[in-house]
Image (tube, rainbow, N blue to C red; front, side):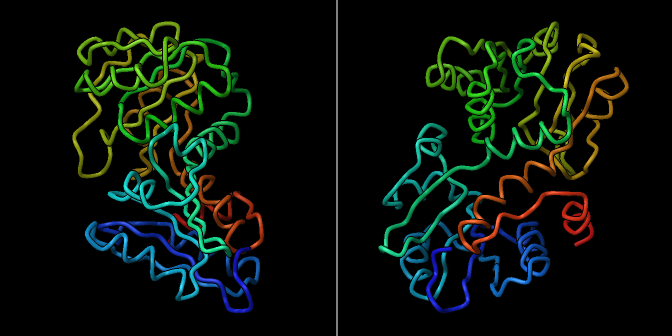
Length: 279
């Protein structure tokens, strides 16, 4: 914990922020472990980001979660950037250190892997190729994490191919880029399949890629968690795949920040999921 004698404050910044479930999650953990602290959602416009990061530590804040549209910009304002955040090109966790410096980290990839291992205990990352739909910031975190766990080939597709090609340029030859119209063909032989797009989210367009070539032994996960069981996951389950919803990634990525800010490593379990789902 990075605070002194005062009650530690943390929060999440974004624009907008009302949709965030992070306050319910951290509030539950604070109450569960009897920790004196507060976690506050803050709508910070891009023009005000630098001022916010300058003033919040003076008000007793020990750190922040960061969501859209600030994940990339905070890297430019941080004094210390972790290797993970630098590789991904974005940060989701800030720590206001006692020496006055701002430390930026990205725990999305670690949260993604922890969720997969919890939801699919028999998952073996080296068993075969992985397929990733999408090439945004979430995809960068997922790709970095998959490569770190030993995946030898990642088949990547995005609705605009240049964004996918940019990731291949950054991450190397283990990435194979396919056109979006051919995305269904990438599934043959894949043992890990990940949707990092917003397709299938409530209020967003449907996920329309055919899953006929999906292997029944594959582990399939969707970063979308509204709805919890997306049509993508339902179709995969109907083919016999092991499916993992996206809520666990949100929970697991939050745990390292909570530990740094409040001095206690929280447990991600069924009670935690229920608390966030019913908030």
